Image 1 (cartoon, rainbow over the protein chains, first blue to last red):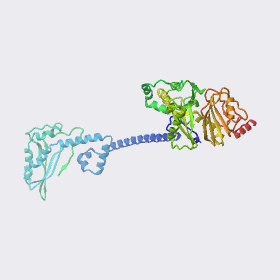
Image 2: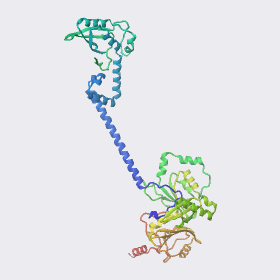
Image 3: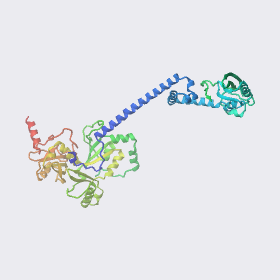
Image 4: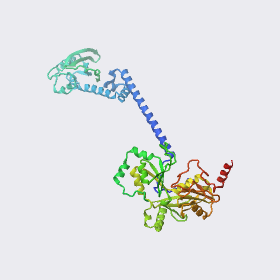
Length: 227
Length: 303
């Protein structure tokens, strides 16, 4: 009937929302509200779960397994744990510890360590070079007899600190007092000699003259091997 | 019309009043629409219009309608409200366009009506606000000659009132008459007289479709004059009169063929819409043009 009713209006208004419009608006707002509340609860749940996971992972894993060397060569399980750690609330702390470990690794006087193997006389085949700030230098080599091994030990004892070469790295090591001209290595020792079919397999151990103690609170240095 | 504000709008003040914050804007948007009847004697506030809204109006004032001197005065008294202005026939000219006219759309109809009004009323008609309407295949145009629309809108803006509609009273009266006397919409020939003192808007209907829309002047405001004038018109199946402004209450008489809704006196309409469930022969007329309703009333009386 209303379409037969004249409805002149001098303002010529646009139609105002009717009952259905209000109902749609109300329903839409209600759905929005419910989804916001639901999303908020889900976000909280996720945060709690991640926190619990991070806590669990920290308790379950021995600190050494989270080192760089281990992480690079470790199984995917450890990598996954590291990834979860990184995405959790303690991600920032984990990253900081990781950075510290890397800095300590980089701070070691690697040129001197490599020079230790190069200073050896000919006739030695080096099998293993291992260096860590805690354990010191460990060199394993193969020689025809014991004389080249002794010569290598002597060469190591004779190696002097080069000064500027070490300064950059030494600054990063707390308590490291390196002086140019002083012997670089101390406690140089032929720790093991073993007869193998190829000749004599020997092991040299040494410590840097001013090897720093491991910084407090930091995990022990990695025992990465370079072959 | 003397009550219309004629002072020039202070643009800065209007802007400040209009600016408001978002909350006030939304409050204004959601404010219920008050129905205001504007005649030559002032403005009558009929309260909130019927219709669904999210919450009930804050409080329905008793003793409606309230009189205000002008629309401007009402705006000052009720800032932050929405309103629909319903205009007395005294402020309007009505045109019913010939159904045969080749007018494609409303703008063509309005342009045609504008030319016609200018022809009869002079250049003043060039500025009159026009409102086109259509119903049952017929088209018409209402012209507001007494007020300018910008003046109304400026009053509303200055007071922070949302002016939502400006409509002729006869269009609401027709809706109310249909609701209260359903026979009017069904009758083969029907007539609605919207009485506004000595000015009567005559709406001729056939099966509920508008056939004629005329404004007629009575010699005076006596009920007898209305009756005499109506008696001179061709008889119809259902005749309904409503309105106000007669100088004495309408006394229904047998055979006058006019079903009066209300007493047709008083300074303003009693109501602008029918309350829900308010149909048939409530108000005072026994000379019902609707035989079925009359029979029902008769049987009720007998019981």
